[in-house]
Image 1: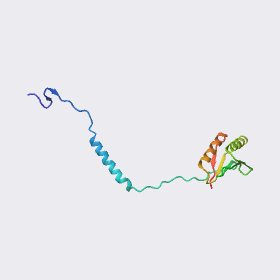
Image 2 (image 1 turned 180 degrees about the vertical axis):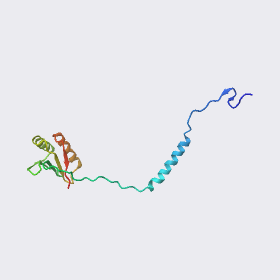
Image 3 (image 1 turned 90 degrees about the horizontal axis):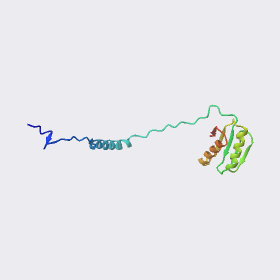
Image 4 (image 1 turned 180 degrees about the horizontal axis):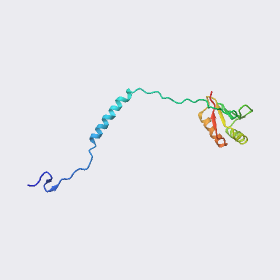
Length: 140
């Protein structure tokens, strides 16, 4: 007597080597529904942002730029005479001149609160191009 369970009509039985993924898809859909229901119930937490404090030892002498919302600017060494400039080219020349005369001094930028952020970023870039390595922003 032959074993018919392994042989059917003289042919050998082949095993499927495939993974049935339908149960996994069902489980994933159930998990997705659970997360969609639970997510709105979780109260949002408060984000704790770092606070900017005053530096430990502010410099006594520094190059200062005052930027105004109307596009005018003044540049000079803090506590001394300031030079008024009307465009970015003059500001770059003044910064390069001060940087050559006082290479050790950092730069402090004081800008009006109504000025565009892009103006401050361009001024920082201009300072780095002029050879000033340390740049700070003045706050009130």
